[in-house]
Length: 124
Image 1 (cartoon, rainbow, N blue to C red):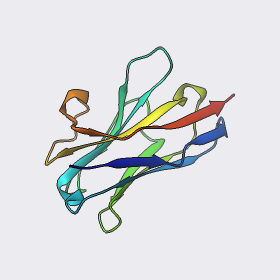
Image 2: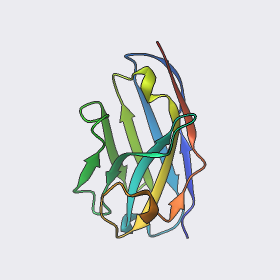
Image 3: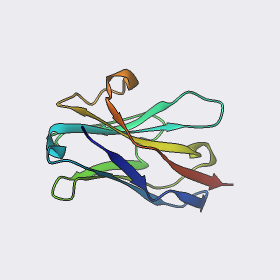
């Protein structure tokens, strides 16, 4: 069982930056592929980025490539999402997700554990 708690969301102007954090419980964090998804009002939840359990592989949605960076610190049981050059269309609730020994594909149904989400609002 893994519990995930996101933090770092907030209100930022377009062009600004935010760093989201997701703290995980448990002693087996290093065996979990971690990902970020987001859900805007009235839209389905969509994949943003993922990092493999070994940390050597990442995957990004086309909409965030070159602007967002996912990373992890296994010693701190934490995964991060650095978001730069934010746009109003990045406004959403951002969720952290995990699946053990998984690949970095963005298929939502493969992720077993989810956090409660953190709101990111980008003003124009």
